Length: 433
Image 1 (tube, rainbow, N blue to C red):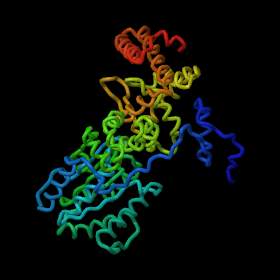
Image 2 (tube, rainbow, N blue to C red):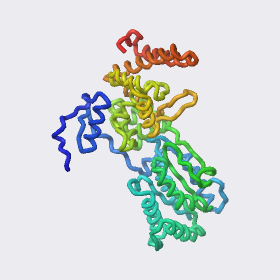
Image 3 (cartoon, rainbow, N blue to C red):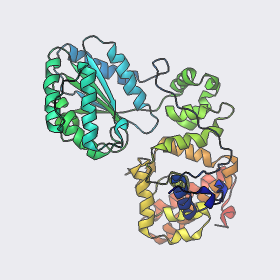
Image 4 (cartoon, one colour):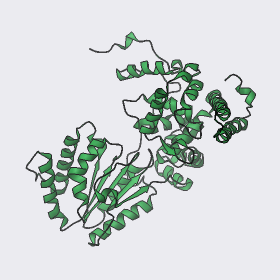
């Protein structure tokens, strides 16, 4: 039965004030409804990888090329698996594609690439079968596989591949690894990655974000090199914009201050060359596109905004911050399980990680920078103030209530008081909280 959107009133963004409203809107979205956003603009079209648009990552490319040349020269290598890690927007996919371009220029090595995102929606077994058929066609240019049973399909593929490896090494590049279903990764390891990793003339390069998958194969876990992709420097950001958004090069430092050198965030901010701040909303939304369909993206974004003024958080702070964000005291009556669900959604999407020094969860640095700047824009100044006031009051109460950790909470309260003072607010301005 077709859903009749005329049965629902037109919902404006400014009218959505609490979680209940968002639940209704989320249901509406899933059935084809629309939401009118203030000052809505079409999001920037993300650039596709090209060799000319690629900048930086010289160290990473040198590492891979060095190992590839060693394989070509039949030198023994203890570590033949390289895993590039990084948050959304750090350029993992572009690096994988650029590596394929560079490796293709080397003589006597075969480079193959797959993106596990292309197999989303298939069962693990179906996905691995498709991957094996795809690789077989790329290597042999014709079908050499005579079975459809996955175990035998894997054995037959590896049998043909070992003949090739006697003459040429292979570099196998895999994108979107740790974001993928772990059942897919288990099946992929059993029938492809594990057998490949055991071959001395195969190099595996993977890229992914979030929690690393616990591979069983020693070459993938114990003898793998993990490498975190660092943000760009100001000069690297300038070089990126010169190739991708030349009209915004003159604002490269203002863009860098907001993006922290995250290439994706820099690109989105540069889409509004008249003012980087006007690109904050779409930059944040682009980083949040990794939120799965099972989670209300807009509601999770507001949860992130509410806690972004904190140095660290756990479920204990969430009810107070949501109450301040929505202006609804009822959130303070939330059960621990409700607040824990918010925290788990944030962590599951890899937007936060535990910080032992802070004794709490800390938001991803790029997302945190963007959210903080977004809340400090003129039209959100009152919300920013309200959140800091609520946090200050909460930590003062904790300092009085928990004597053993009183100093810690008083330090946090002082932080929020100082943040308010920087903007010209005093604690008297918090009297309405």
